[in-house]
Image (cartoon, rainbow, N blue to C red; front, top):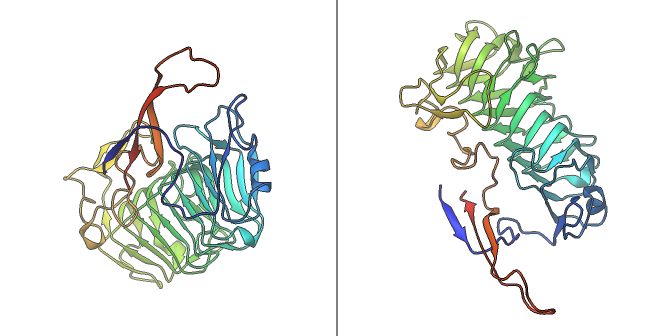
Length: 339
């Protein structure tokens, strides 16, 4: 990971091949093409990118009906939405990153190919979301409908259940999906899997760290490999249709810094060399969010700053007074979090 110093904040994302980039800000006096996110969505064409400015006021409950790339700046409560809902299959292929969603991200129609990363949200509902990936998110309540559609990948997320009894994974699905390299903090009486309406099926669980209880009997035809678990029921797989190897049962996770309850701005979930999950994941990588294929960016405070997006660290005008119709000289510097 490296930080690259730049001379000026220039909102141009080289990682996106899109038709048009447009700006949105609901802050009075800001210069932007749209003052509300709803108006921006209505006024853009499919595959456009919307760069959403930080604001102390929520952008509201947002509905997306076409393929768009919604990009906030990350940061604590930086770009806040009450909720985000996909309302049409035409929204397939959309990107959602760098947002603070205080409610849920969900879909009313079947959408495919979503990229959901670097967000904070309360609930991620995967109902009607197919062949999509969600990684490097911080989820403060639960994930719903994992496996309701096939091809879902939930990778390298931090999930901490604020409710003492809510399961981390709620409303089971039956389609093949992947749950890997996540760190899950469960409430005192919460279970990992909610099976009151049936069992999860055909889920590949690997490289996760679960601080709490897992009962594998709440899953059918599932695979559990290289997970670090506080406690586990039937992790020997003597009965049932599940299988798994190299799971570690240990109440010590070995995080660099963690004091319950989890705090995304104070805790450090890197693993110490003495951790039972250190380099014991599949392919010899760490279990948890800093291992695997989509590790959290090391300098991003768990994805709070967005890789590839320039950030201004200083801005200073050279002259406070300039003639009419002349240029205003200034000096600016900043950085980019490397991928």
